[in-house]
Every structure is written in C-alpha cells, then in structure tokens.
Image (cartoon, rainbow, N blue to C red):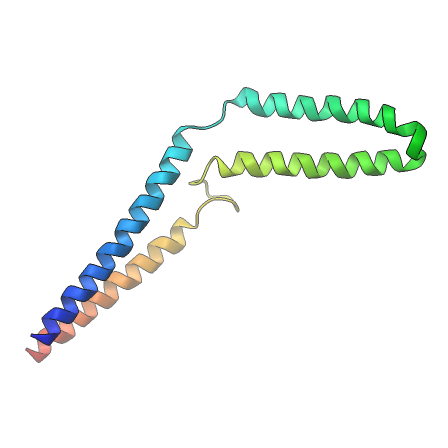
Length: 126
C-alpha cells in the first residue's frame, strides 16, 4: 500500500509541475500573439535619433567636447532598452533572450524517466 501511495504522490507532484508549466507557457503564448506593432519600434528609433540630434545641439555649447561621448553613450543605452523590449515580445525565439525550451524539455524528460524507473522498481517488489 505504501508504494502505491508514493507513486500517487509522485504523479500528483509531476501533475502540479506540469500544470504550472502549462500556465506559464499560456502566458508566454499571450505575449507572443499580442506583439507590438512594427511601427512602434520605428517610431521609438526615429524619436531617439531626433531627440539626440536636438540634444547634441543644445548641449554642445555647455559641455563642448563631451557632447559626442555623452550622446553616444545615452543613445547606446536607450537603443539597448528598445532591443531588449523587442526581444522580450518573442519569448519562444531561439535567441539569448528566449525561453530555455530545450532545458525545460530535458528536465521534464528526466523527471518522467525517474518516475518510470521508480514505478518499475516498485513493480519488482510487489
């Protein structure tokens, strides 16, 4: 009776983990299906260029030779934030910012194999 209770507990734990994984993938599918329009990225990039052209003209008399360094650094930071935002809108891509789907699959495979191994060991004892 104890081995079957342990087996039921293992199946229940695996079912809870798979349920949570399914909920998380569902949220990622919502994100993936409701992407930002391409015009958003074009607008943000053109706004950044426009802002930094005007900012460099405004800051040049005051900070002189530091203007290109400051503008370059700030443009790099803001464009990096825009790129990261674009990458986060595609959670299933195989890029550095995508979900580690291969790792999830390997972990689930190991868990299923462990439960299968335990089940076969319990059947040998009965």
